[in-house]
Length: 57
Image (cartoon, rainbow, N blue to C red; front, side, top):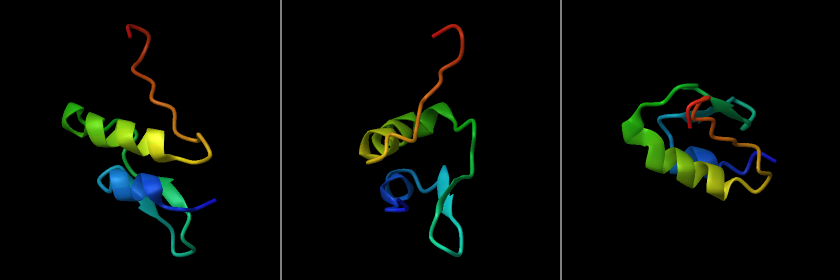
């Protein structure tokens, strides 16, 4: 879909290709970025972002 909402919410974590497709730049973002990553996941119209806190969460 490439609407870029996740990139706008968390530009430190999501980037884009020359064609405009969103790409994951940081697979394990810091705890300080959690709020923006959650916002990015919530704003993704395709539900393509899943936050995995690991087996202990």
